[in-house]
Figure 1 (spheres, protein in one colour):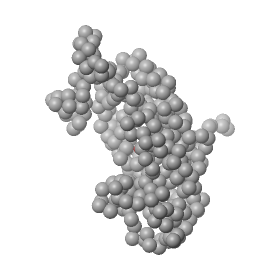
Figure 2 (figure 1 turned 90 degrees about the vertical axis):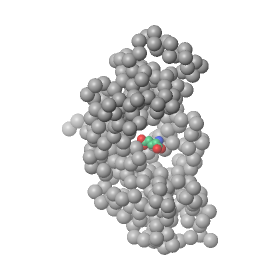
Figure 3 (figure 1 turned 135 degrees about the vertical axis):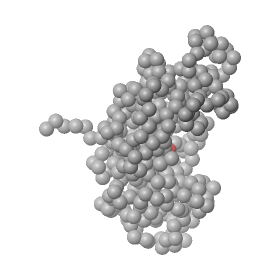
Figure 4 (figure 1 turned 45 degrees about the horizontal axis):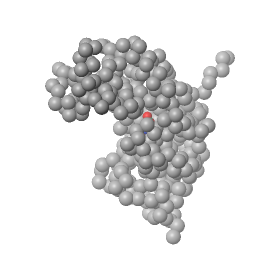
Length: 319
Ligand code: GLU
């Protein structure tokens, strides 16, 4: 029998502050999906967006370790991978699949949308410029630089994909940005290039990213990288705050540090998250190994979980 290199799952947080219970729950699930399927588990800090980078990568890794999550090898910093990102953009450009876009957000909102285009889709203003028009447009926005967009080929719109949690899921594909005018490589491009380089074949993340997945699958195909079914996706339910909206820092004690200040240590926090996933009884403290023994992706709750749960009083508190 030929030996195949084992695949990998990963967790890929953006270092924009401490991880909250929603992020931590997704990280636990990514670990459980990977380890229960015999995959390696990798870590990548997605630090490309300088405006949102709060330098919290190291602290995020500490919190993940406190929960008991481990990973193989060193955490990868996305900002170290710029050469690969640029090489991918260059390959797409060589294939005629990249164009410069000088539109501002306001230009895009003001432009008439193309017939049948999904709401918010890029209207294609800069798509078919001649060389002279492009030079003129560049001059007009100087010193701002143009963004780069993908010229989505006609008929490449497979908008549906199979998801381990959602079943069939979909998202729209327009001529999305590959690199912003300020030089920042876009999330969709970086995530595809990095997952392929790290041999990730299982992507587990929050279901707010499900609608981006068809764009990422299109990029995989255009770049000749592994794509479904060789790569599998699991988009997991978000955690909601007391008001019913997606959990956020304003919802109070939602990070491990906040909870510790309230007397709930990482072991109790892990137990609360395990309970929310149906992997522990109310008040029961469990290890990650026990959670792994009990984990069955088919039994994962499909509904969002609301913080704080009624059973929060059942967990031990340190004075
Ligand atoms: N960095 C993204 C986030 O923190 C996740 C990207 C991914 O898992 O594909 O929301």
